[in-house]
Structures are given as structure tokens and as C-alpha cells.
Length: 80
Image (cartoon, rainbow, N blue to C red; front, side, top):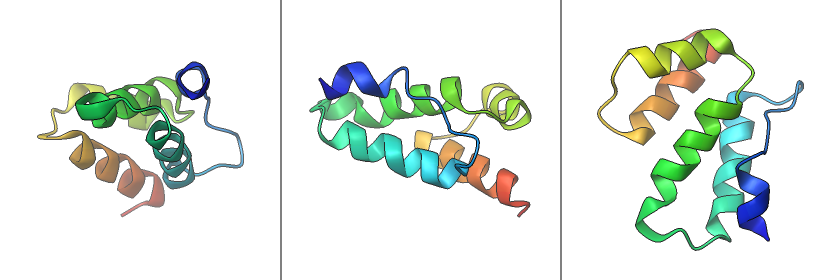
């Protein structure tokens, strides 16, 4: 059932990107996605975040790994 919950999960208005990422990774841990976990979580994260500026930057500026893209998004939101 967790697989059906993770993909439509939207970032909440009072939720930071870090909190949103942690929620998605927690959900994914129960899904048994295997080797695709990191990539699927990143797709859900980018698709369902509220910050369109961060979303656009992640999609237009290539990152070497999903973890690098996530760190970039969180740092961008936190103003670092």
C-alpha cells in the first residue's frame, strides 16, 4: 500500500524540503524498491515539491547523483 502513497505525496505548506525528503525516504523504506529507491524518491521529490524555482533549477542544472540534487535543493531553500 505504501507504493500507492509515495508518488502522489505532495509537500505540505508548512513542510521544509528537508522534512519532505525525510518523509519520502521513510515511506520508500517500506516499499522495497531495491536499487531504484534513490531514483524513484528523487522523482517524487522533484515532481511534488512546492518551490518551483528549486524544481526548475534541479531539472535544468545537471547533478552527478540524486543525493547531490537533494542536497542542492535543501541548501537552496535554506539560503546556503
